[in-house]
Length: 237
Length: 237
DNA sequence: TAAAAGAACTTGTATATACAAGTTCAATTT
DNA sequence: AAATTGAACTTGTATATACAAGTTCTTTTA
Image (cartoon, rainbow over all chains, first blue to last red; front, side, top):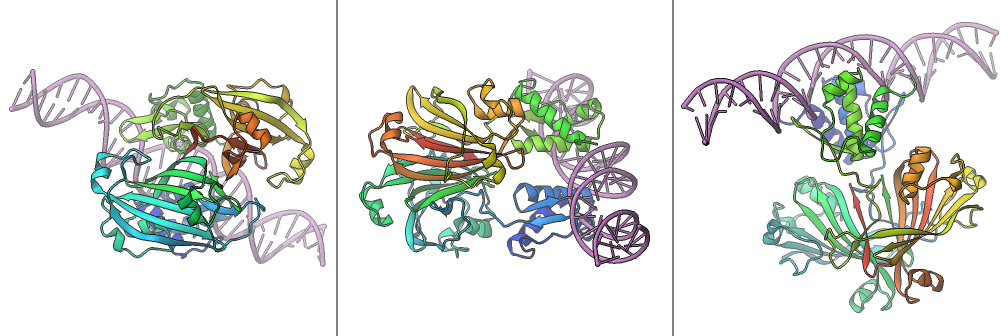
């Protein structure tokens, strides 16, 4: 037996949700239906559903069924909200553009997180992105990933302008944890220019280290955020 | 049947871990042992253990057993790290003092999160704390909780100077989620004085809404952090 | 017509059992 | 003495079954 059947079902259901086969708000097939269709016990189906629930893909209601959730990005990090309407549900148009295409470089000396020998030798793929909300630049993001077992990453087509979705699509890499450090600093000349701010404006500086489903593979980010009009929001469960 | 037996076991094991009955790094009794001792199926024991694992109290290893983890605070939020040694494990002495004892007041007009009718009527318990690292003030924290079913809170003895541990001890309230907004702002006169900073220094301003194990009960915080020497760190799993 | 009861579904809790697979350590073999 | 084997433990995967409890909709009753 290679991978357990309930894990297969879990993966399949997750994939189905992600491609929209089951729309959010709708019900998944009932446990009995799934158990019959895949000829496995209801207990095993429940194990698969529990995993989905834990990951936030579904919620379950006794007597009702398993309801597909609005899928939140990986860990609920990194969402923008207008500060004036802190709890408002107003949607903003968010776009993202490359300042430079992903390219293979050497790791910077004195990188902001410690690197393993493996990572250091592999070299670094650097990505510079500028994120805009309502056509205003609000976030400058430098992302670095080790060139380890992600063949031809720089040539790959990006999925939804999302690094994480791209990594999942092409390499089945999922983000499983985040370790971050947040500071308030003043915008220096270069950053201020990119974010269209006066030099000296207070901005957020965030260092992030993302853990993934692949042991020892991490993604690193350095973010500069203008929070004059939009706060950085995150929901953690 | 009031509360399911596996949930009872789950709560009991959790309590045992928290009071140190099972030390971190040690093994829990095996599933068969627990199943015999509590006369329930191994499957039910496994449900209890799965919940513990999900909450981060134990990890499980096939063939080995269930290992008690070093218990991380609720959601891994809010830890300080010296910025110069971003990944360093150096410990800092953290202390916390009240600027004013918890007191019952009216909710502020234009509170930073929307309040339910219930919360608004109940009134607000306000807490002002100043947190110091290595005897330097680094964080000013205003906490507000509705005076809902937490009788005599203002008279209660605090546990480990921790609001959350206090709420758990006296009312079995656990923090289950956090919704936060982070901005970089400049220190105004009053805040600057409290944090021993020059007016205009960039600081973090964080609004938080904590969800709890009790439906509809939330804790609100407004934080001002000096991040010149210590960054706000968080690990999310 | 409106309320109550019931049938048919859903997920939740629970028992009993079996074997697979990883870990540990003692007993046996080389 | 060192390596191998094997027994006895651990957690992981799996089946089959039963009833409790919540939801929904239809049927019956008042």
